[in-house]
Image 1: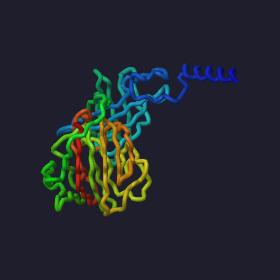
Image 2: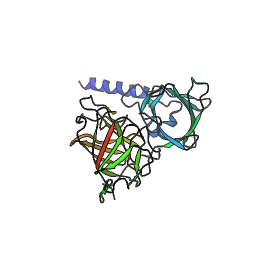
Image 3: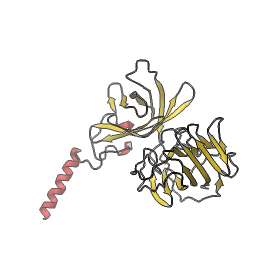
Image 4: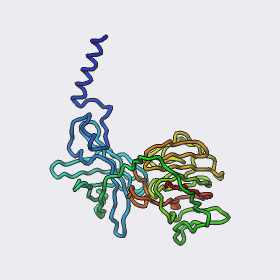
Length: 329
């Protein structure tokens, strides 16, 4: 038996030396890239990146994750200016031009999206276009590494902020937004615009009550960047796009959704990247890290405080009441 154990250990060490073990092949930090596998070209860009896209007017936000897969390929995930995180089957790297590129199929549109970029001075710089459209214009972008947002001290909570105490006075609301406030209830009907708090927050606990009509869709953006889904999900299988999910990233452990037209409750805690979601008294996400921004984020500046944003661009009737935020001190 002792001889058999020694042979197993020796065989395992040989596999590790050859880079053939698969248990630790995918890394998202450059400093960890070669711990278990041999180096591969382009691995210096491994990591998570906050992207700022330059538009004809203003800017927009995206997010990219580059991962070393096994001992020969780069793969990843991408979040566009809308939609959810989607897998990248392979990120190509040219050792000659030092250029990275990948193409991802459409999610809500009709055309493939291609990103081409280089790693320069610790940043990614490149452009995105539609390769099958000869009239496609390039949108240029830059990206910085996403902050880890680690907290070293336990949170101390301050005084609660009642965000609907004075109607819409705490919110930035545009004309013809589709939002109204009557009898203590904030209501949105059909397509309109998003609204967000005038005040910005870092770490906080958020309590709110909400209800929706059948097939309704909305969302609550934490710091304006991480969407907690609000969607008629009664009886559905759990996944990250259903009620209580962190859109495209984190799936609730159970479906705690009630039927439409019934008031429901959220208790959400966000500390750094770590999020806990309690839906209707049931903990459905427990202290999980949010990898990056979700589609529709106000910007990609993850290290900064941000507002609470309510999505008003989707279908159905949504109502909110008793929105109470307790910030960290």
